[in-house]
Amino acid sequence: MQETTPGPELPAPHYREDYRLAVDALVEEDVDGYYKFLQFVDVVDFLSPSEINYIQNAIQLPKQSNHPEQRYLDTSGESSSDTYWPLHSDLDAPGLDLGWPQIHHFIGPTEVTTLVNPAAPDMPSIKEQARRLIKNAQMVIAVVMDMFTDVDIFADILNAAMRNVAVYLLLDEANVKHFVNMVNNCRVNLQSLQSLRVRTVTGIKYHCRTGKSFTGQMLDRFILTDCRAVLSGNYSFMWSYEKLHRCMAHLFLGQLVSTFDEEFRILFAQSEPLIIENMEDMTILPKHPLPGEWPRLRDTRMRQPFEENMDRRMNQHKRQETFMDLWIFTIAIRLRSRS
Image (tube, rainbow, N blue to C red; front, side, top):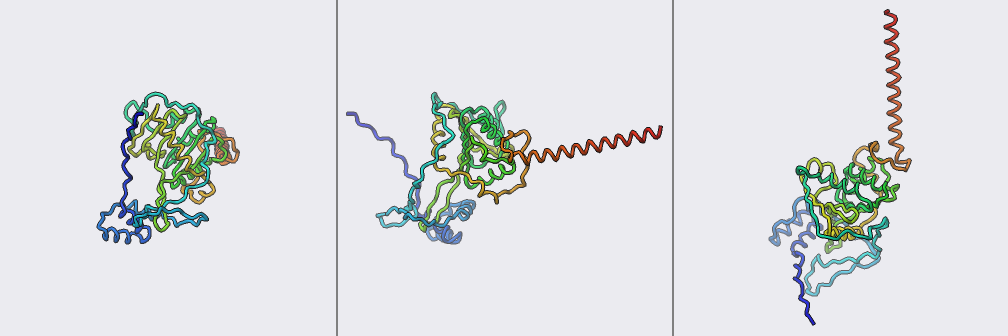
């Protein structure tokens, strides 16, 4: 019998007890307690000011539950805030109810094309490639994005949904208010689109010894179409990423696409449905009518603001025509009287 050779041992996750205790001090005793603890244990400041500010703004108190929390019992007798393990949820993972391709195109070697912003000569921009993938999709579009406020890409998404392409959007929970604001400004009713699902995902939840916690963000950025092509990089769907920021993305074809397929399924299983009603008080900018070149959606409630705006424009145009007719008529009368 042939013996199997064990694979290489994976390195353990980086862990430092003094880091954990310092974070606990920040959560419980604010910034002063954090710096006092660092000075006491003679540890260099390992958190940036932005990280400290994020943690302070994201702290959540422990929730009351009928189920007792499970804690790992450390037999060494040394307490650590890393030994807190909450129970897993008993809820079933959400299903891909719009469907998912059964035949995957993961065959063959991986092909990688690198795109940069600003675009290299004779190469499409990252935004152009993303829009091309969306417009050419026939079965499914899966978008995972930390920030989505690009109205052009959103219009392409709406057009794809109107073509009965299954569209799944997974957005970062902390930034989804900006997406909702864009949707409201465009006068779009997401609930009327039967081929579109929008859900939110958070980052990793960090538990402190006292039961308090704070959650990170979902910062993945990729789009998967028809389970055959993936565009992934540090490009967010925002106007500024097209016009201002330097960034990079890679277009993947072939076997490596299966990795993104698996990652999307994992994120989708951890996601929550987007509830628009909870976002009404988060509108930042004034609302604008839906642009005329966008897809005309069937819900009359969605078209009403746009049609009312067009009616006002037509009435103004008619009044201008009437004024011009009267002006021309008056000039003609004056010329006739002079002759």
